[in-house]
Amino acid sequence: MLDDSADLNRVKEKILADRARYSFPKTEKKNASDKDSDAGDNTEDDHIHMSLYNSSHPELILTYQKCRLPPEGEVRFGKALRDYRNGVPYPFNSKGLQLTAETGNPFYKESEIFWMRLEEVPAGEEITQENTTIERVYGDFNQPVDVCGNCGTKLYCGKTCQKVHTPKHSCLCPGFRKAHEEQPADACGNCGAKQTKDGSALKRCARCKNRNYCSVECQKEHYHAHVSKCKTEAEETKEKENGRRVMGLNVLQTW
Image (cartoon, rainbow, N blue to C red; front, top):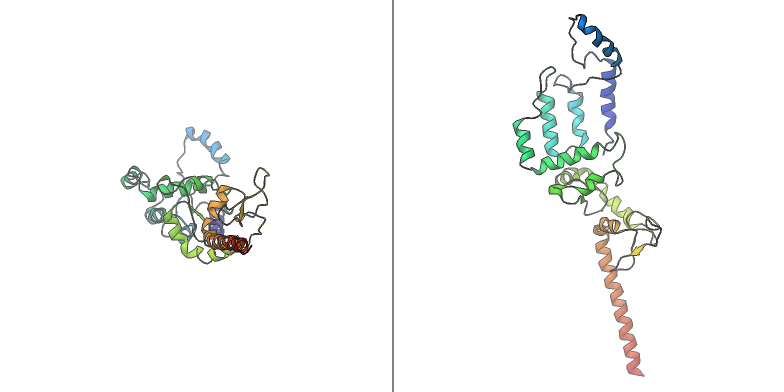
């Protein structure tokens, strides 16, 4: 989800090349009391003082939409980019934002969880099941995380984010589902593990008895991809068992 970070890296290179353009202007008037602060200024050269771009610097305006923010977060960030001016305080704690937080708007909750999750994932690294703890625990109205019902692979912090991401995910979804279905019979149907985390044998699906899983979590994530095949195999198994019983009964009647 963070594969577009290369654009932000180019913006960072421009900032490093011309710090004066992207930093606040310093006052030229100094007195004796400023001598102590001069020494501190020299030690801060390695720190970059950045501010939001305004409309005259379109780089960030063109790239922020690639970060796949929640819809409400994208609207807020776009408004900040359009309205912010260097040297003019921006009303981050505006009345509108306070009302959004106090009323428990679902967009606010999703946006909050989205940022909490991304802060744990370094830029450029793929978001996986291992580094999405908060995403997997919370979602819309503090309910469990949403998972793509078709492939059972892609995780989402809420239904809104899932709907926004559907066009991009639809081209990969069939491939994910096919990969799940092609797991070996002796491996976990969801993750491909050969045994459980504690080293014990895999557990079989109680209905079809053909698909193995290493944990209840993997079984739940793979359910939507397995359910149709599971029902079919379970019915076939039941028919075979019924056929054997009838055949045995006929033999007994013949004798």
